[in-house]
Length: 329
Image (cartoon, rainbow, N blue to C red; front, side, top):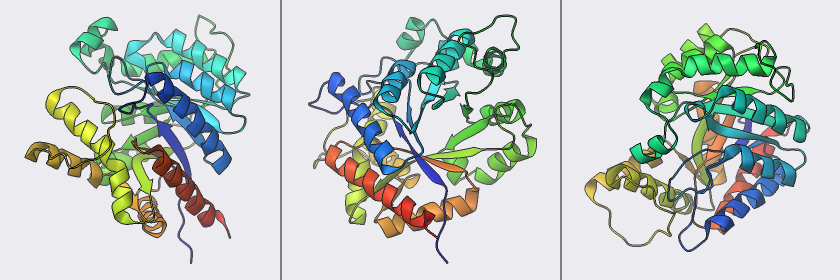
């Protein structure tokens, strides 16, 4: 009996590469989106990061609009827009505009993360208290999108834009109570999945946006001809994450060389790789099917930044191929 797992989408964080300009990075996002559409991926999402040296994606609504204008069929979305940084009315207007301009292909993913550093948070006029009102911001956003607010957001959306919550901890409960889809990754999938996923499903309340619980599993995935090659593809981002946690800044992706990491950085790299899926097509097929069996996820959202663009392209193609193979009767 063939293995089965759900549809697969892509989240591109617009990570910069050493030796390349940020303008080139954004163009590469557009190129990848076109390829994802051609390969049959369900969605292509972009993210929001402010003042991060190694990430060019700071304006997801603008980048999503560019992706939508360069594609015709794939769903386009944000993974996500950080509500503490924006007024809910403005987010609703952006989402409704993007839905209207993309012939209904837009997905609104929202999160509660604050800026990367204190200086960024100050520049955004945000502080920790702003993330504490996430539930209220969600409710206000939905009222604008659904047309129940005293202020009419235009263009009128009528609750037609699918809304997803990038959730950890309390965000899972907020998504369930609001009747929204949830995007989960990291420990919520690999260590604490039973309690988190069951809590979301058990407390979910149907809404105009979603009539049933909908779980998107977000994780780094790479596919290559050999397992070492697939692991190598994930190393640049894993190293960049390790540097961000040990030195306080997120560097541009670099080619993996013989540079030695210290013990803490090595541990952080292995921790990052431990929550990723990588290997040959057969190995990745088994790992994704196992994750689906354990979580019941409705969709996989694939992330992970590679320095080698050609290897990233091959990985995208091979992953799409194994997804198509699973869909055959």
